Length: 111
Image (cartoon, rainbow, N blue to C red; front, side, top):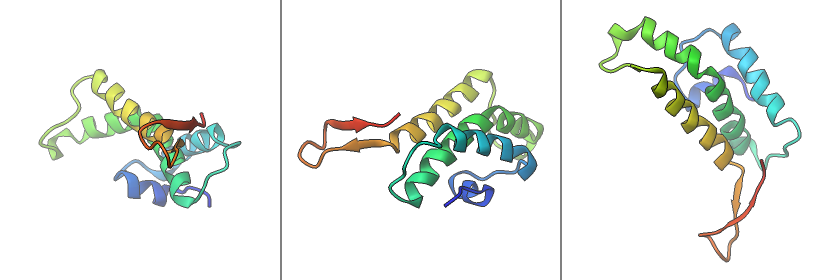
């Protein structure tokens, strides 16, 4: 499965145009080109989350442009960094495996 802009919208509502999203989606796909995903869900989690990580600055600008539509908006670039960290952690955690015997320990990490 190739992750698409429509797939991304299931992770986060995007109002940015597809032509602006595609380069970031391509980069995220390239980042994991050697990765063999277990299934389409894992692929969407990893590539989609990494795409949102790359899109964070554009999303911040978009939200600021439409700030009157939101009760709260991102106020500082630190908030963008936190947003990016969330999506990067989500992408990386989707590749983390836990052994069945010790669910509290990491079995392997594919990064």
